[in-house]
Length: 293
Ligand SMILES: [Zn+2]
Image (cartoon, rainbow, N blue to C red; front, side, top):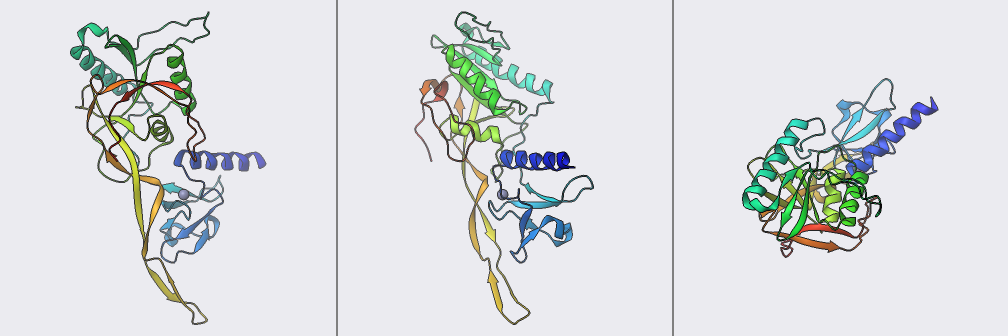
């Protein structure tokens, strides 16, 4: 039983890290109607809606036989191409690769080329999704399928850095990113840390271009509520706006061509606030635009 409890607790902590908020780990959330704190074991779905008292995202109560009652965050995410969509992922890599090759036919562009290990220098084998040459330098483009953990992203980035190959990480989507609030996943936030406040998205039709997106502040309206307690006391709450902590508003940059608008950039190490993974010193294929927000 202890093991089961431990596993449930671990699962909730994983959810919290992925979401970017630990506010529901303790098993309590706030009821939207009254803003009172309630525990998951004391309420049913009908008592909702609920929200997280720390990040203000919607929370849903989960009741299942095997698990402890708990609250979970709920927020829309990007339509990223998933780990199990291998064919779609491959098609997207090939499309970007073909467009880059069309733009610079002498760049020996290739999808999934194996760069062998260098045992003498202690460098591992690596297989970039797309690689080639631009302006006499090597470039690697990684088209992130959402299965990759941030530990793997970090390792791969460092392997490229050992070889002095600047890398561009791209998040492929099924369709154009809508101009609507969403909750970036852990790895999308990690790219935001690596690339100085932008994550590069690709969707069908963009060819060899990517859309840089900054995660701007999104607000939640906390509705006004008033009632009289049994003793006659008048209670008033809400009626104001708060900043969401994990939900963001996309701030779109100008569309950028992977070949023309990027250049090699050696970035310094950086430890972001509230993120488990620090960004090491590494070689990036980075847009040379001024910040536009
Ligand atoms: Zn939260």
